[in-house]
Structures are given as C-alpha cells and as structure tokens.
Amino acid sequence: GNSVTQMEGPVTLSEEAFLTINCTYTATGYPSLFWYVQYPGEGLQLLLKATKADDKGSNKGFEATYRKETTSFHLEKGSVQVSDSAVYFCALAGTALIFGKGTTLSVSS
Amino acid sequence: DAMVIQNPRYQVTQFGKPVTLSCSQTLNHNVMYWYQQKSSQAPKLLFHYYDKDFNNEADTPDNFQSRRPNTSFCFLDIRSPGLGDAAMYLCATSRDTGTLAGGYEQYFGPGTRLTVT
Image 1 (cartoon, helix red, strand yellow):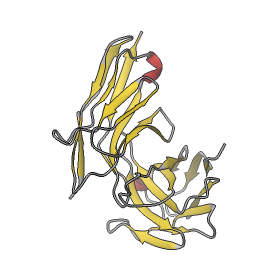
Image 2 (image 1 turned 90 degrees about the horizontal axis):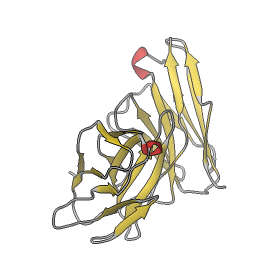
Image 3 (image 1 turned 180 degrees about the horizontal axis):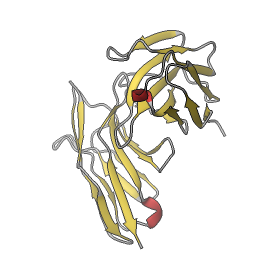
C-alpha cells in the first residue's frame, strides 16, 4: 500500500543554517504530496504542496520538489530561523492523508 | 477568515466518564475528519464523514463515535474514556477525498487536548 518515510529527528540547527528534511514515498500512480507543520500545542498547518511530478511547492522560504524518479519530496530552506522550530510532517494524498512519522526541528540563535 | 474551530481547546475528564469534543467549519467542505495524535507521533485517522456518509477506520475502537448533524458541525464522542485515550484530537476538513488530479488538502483545527484522570 501507499506509505511515506521521513528522516528521523530531531534535527538541531543554528539560525541561518540550511535545512533539508528527507521524505520518500511509495504509491500507486502520482498522488499529491504535502508538507504540514505543527507548532507546539497547535494543530497542523499546510506548508506547501505539489500535485504532479516535477511540481515545486514553496511557501515562507521552504521548498519541495515532487521527484518521481527518486520518489522523493524533500523539504528545504536556505536559512532557518528560530521561529521555524516545529514538527514537520510529509503526507501523501489518498482516501485520507497518509502521514510520515514527523521530524522535529529545533533552531537555536 | 474561513476556518476550522475546535472546542474546547483543553478538556479534562474522569476515567469512564463520557466526553464530547466539538468541531465546526466555515469552509463549507464536504469532508470532515477526526484524528487522534499521541505525543511525538503522527496523527492517526479515526473516521471521516463525506457529507452524511460515515467512514470508520478498521482499527478505531468502538469506544469512539461521531456525529455530523449538518455540514458545519462534527462531534467526537468517547463513551468510556480510558487512560490510553489521553491525546490531542484534531479535526480536519477537505473539499473532497481521493487522489484528484488537482490534489486536495486538509485544513486542520487547533486541536483539543484531552486529559483523562
């Protein structure tokens, strides 16, 4: 069946460092892919999405490209801020969303 | 702004005492979902409604029930909460389900943190 695998955290970075969070998927066909972010004590917010191969989703300096050759949707940001500290979930569209296990990002000043 | 609202944000209940969590939406979406999220885990889908059609996940305990009296509201009822039901409960909505060509996304409420004493 369809599934999502994310790199395990936590990821600890200094402010202005480059961020990559790896996400790979297994799916039939080419479902839409998403990154959600969850700040402490809050619900999930959609960060970005891509609906077909080679699409690039972007928002708030974060980017991810839907790569069917490598079945990947890695999240990147060129310069992280303390306010980016949160849990990031990669997800795949199905009858309902299929989530990865989440990656905790901690950014220090 | 259109949104998903959950009440209360924090709920404390006693072991075995029924509790109801509430969700409302102003997005006029067809689908409403309930997820359970335990600490440091991904959200786990309990069930969803497509309009009035109820869809239960196979591994959702019978202790969890849901009602959707109209498009805007959906309730999660826990008939006899156990200590293991302490979690964050997330409500979400989407316009449709499935792998549509245009993709679909879910909009989440802020969650209700349930404590069982």
